[in-house]
Image (cartoon, rainbow, N blue to C red):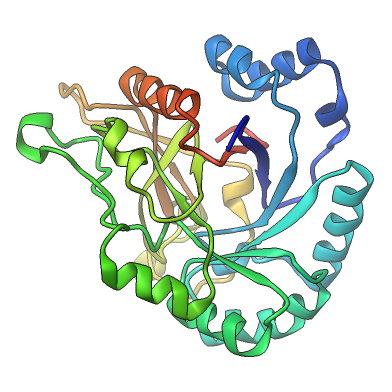
Amino acid sequence: MNTPELAVAACHALDLAWTAAATAERAEHWQRLHGDAELATWLAPLQPTHLYFGSEFCEHLLPSARALREALSQAKSAGLRLVLLTPVASPEVLTQLDVLLPTLPAGSEVVVNDWGVAHELASRFGDLRPVAGRVLCRMTKDPRIDAGWAGRCGHGLAAPTMHALFSRLGIRRLEIDVPLFADEEVFADLPLPAAVHLPYVYVAKGRMCRAGSLSVTGTERFAVGRRCQKECLRFSALASRPGRADVAASVQLGNTLFSRHSAAMASSLRQAVDSKRVARLVVPGAPL
């Protein structure tokens, strides 16, 4: 494993022309997106290799067949390989995947965040490559946790039972977040080549969409099952506790809470990359 691959993640169409630009232009692009000059400088020498398309967290953001075809064409034009992101399964998600998965070229990676979806790929779509998504990677990532109480918050992916499950389902890659209190050992004992997400970790998800509920009144305001208008593509909310200094800043986006990497987490990830323990980096292609 040498220089890590770099993936750009999106759930809607993006302008990808910048991915083939010079290093300085890519640095400017990352700076505009994520407001971190140090991060932008670090990422800029890496030319993107993959487009992650879809959603790990919300069934309403799983692309239509038309949107997926357009994304495949756009990725091909930009010289990127498309990876389909899929969320926790519902009957509707499984019905959609029956349409979407045959659209993908043989050998395409599909990030699964549901063991049932992984089984579907293994049993019915043997020419596609399932990747264990970060929803399946159970780690403590709540930014409110105190380091003294939490101790080392690892991933548990190296357990023999997990290795057997990955083997049975044909999973040869996995995705993780940076643990809150990471050290080099977290990345050293990963059983498979790993993609690491940055500069945010996913803390928790549910079915209730905060942004989508703000315009609703009465008892249905924060209920699930309402019609989605994809408000999360336009609105996010900072989540904070007055008078408390949490480990990292948090952002509520749709049905999911994210936390930005602390300086220590960012440093740990860069050390892991320098030690060639990270196969791929995955960065949002739009600001949270």
